[in-house]
Image 1 (cartoon, rainbow, N blue to C red):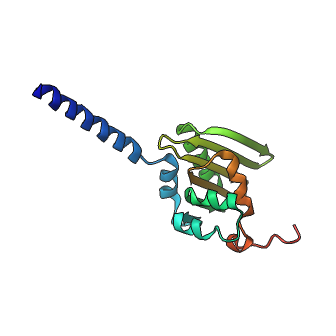
Image 2 (cartoon, rainbow, N blue to C red):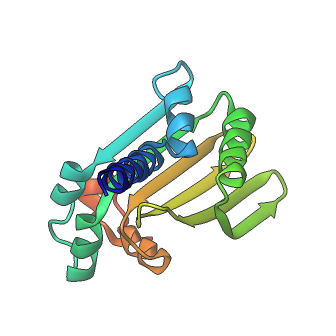
Length: 167
């Protein structure tokens, strides 16, 4: 009986440790940001959960709910190493089994949208936009459905730092 209890406890501990290790694994997109963020020729912006909560002001209830459930929004861009950033981001999306939502190739312009339900119960969205002059990668991570992403387009102009009047 004592041996069975010890074996059960050992197996339970092993399962908990393996689950913890699986949950602690970095997403591939995290490695991409670590690789390029802060490097010469790249600009990166990270909005953490506190900033996202502050951005809710003036938004609809739906937008406020979405921002409450996001962990991070990150953007990295370059006008010097366009091909490298675009290729690296596409490689991450493919390697990490993101689902391609849409892709547009128009001459030298490229844009792609990827989505993934993470094992943690959260979701990950990657947008890649590139041409010969610049490349940008957007990462959104948290608890959301893909159809909710369009709500971010209505974040108040003061937050985005631009004026959309007349557009």
